[in-house]
Length: 278
Image (cartoon, rainbow, N blue to C red; front, side):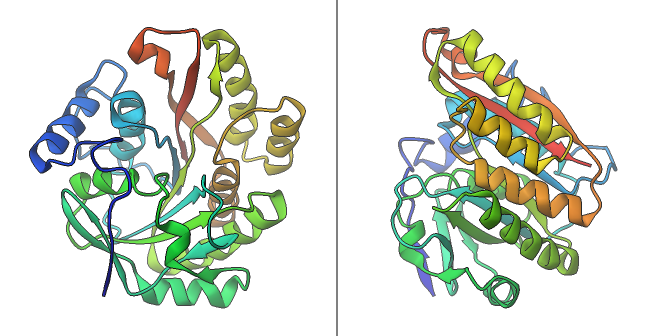
């Protein structure tokens, strides 16, 4: 079994187990966070979530809203789709016979589900290298480990190609796996990057509106017309597509904030949103 070693442990989150656990707890209890720890007492059916993937100090409190909302799930598989920021490896990539290591231990990739996914998605390549540097999926893993049991496995999918055709193909394929496995679906993306706080808010609100309507066509139209710098737009669209096919009828924005809400510097911020599909 190959071990996928952390790429951003010690930078995006602490490399010490105790410090990491403490920081995750602080993110849940943060004024921007849900203000309570898991599990939730809600029994609302949630088909999937959108989560940010920046350093925990900045985006962790927003991400915790998504993780809190799904924390009562009995699922043993999380399908996580994220952008490949480095552009290395394959356009659409997963991996098999691998465990992902974090300071909280190991999480196994569900190789059987990956191979089943490939039967429905011929553009999927099995390629560990594509995932070797990428943080967009990695930063979701410690949250999963803290909220769920050791039985939780993952199916990671990294995207270089995030165009609409690819995203919808990925979404339709993961819907088939999710239906059989009752999997959690996580789309990993930050929103506007390095703009003034007010402008980031207006850009992101415009893009969030079609997400809440599960309107992938309108989502891409707004994305390109307004040049919104959301890094994981294909991951968002994949999860939108999958959730709609599984029966979701709307998205709900649980929390929106920017890095400026944490740091106090509103001159150049990154936007973060926690969205669920129900």
